Image (cartoon, rainbow over all chains, first blue to last red; front, side, top):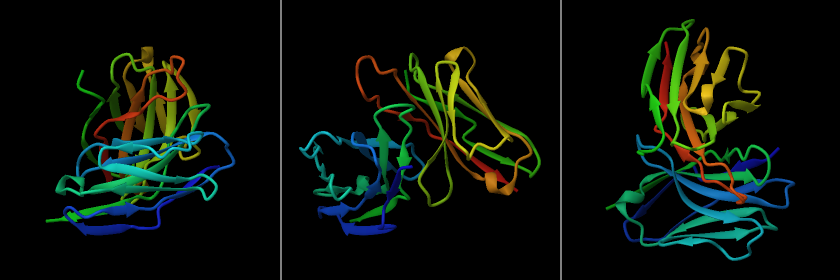
Length: 115
Length: 117
């Protein structure tokens, strides 16, 4: 079975700073997808960024980028120039490429951006 | 199309009562997922439909839980004889069928928050 671990329950930074959220996972699969989802307070979960395991290049989406270390089974999210609207719970998630493609989530990191 | 919708958004019930939640996926999305999220935790997979067929169920889904997706459109999740441990956010997500692609993004609804007193 796959597991996803986020070791930082809470983080807090000042607006415009850069912040990195950590995630490690465990799997015996050779090909899979990794995701970061954002869940703002009282709002629905939205996808921030996705990484395919077979791609060596780290994914980027505007201010969001990942550091994917396949051998170490590590998948961190870097948020540059953080904004107040980035305040949310962030979940790291794993998905196998075959079968039901259900998501396996970590415990989440509560990120607060302070003005 | 305004995305995945769920009804009700909040439900308070007494222990032992039955409750039913509804999820309306994005139209033409063949796959539908139910997840459960307890306070301070990440969502956990409950079950998955491909059209009207329920193809996988988690061990978390005890025999008090049942899900349906008649005609492959909306889905319902029923919990019988609710217990306090059932208190959680129940999330629904939908995705289109892979049409030659290996991955289909899951779009989440706002969730139904259940409180069992």
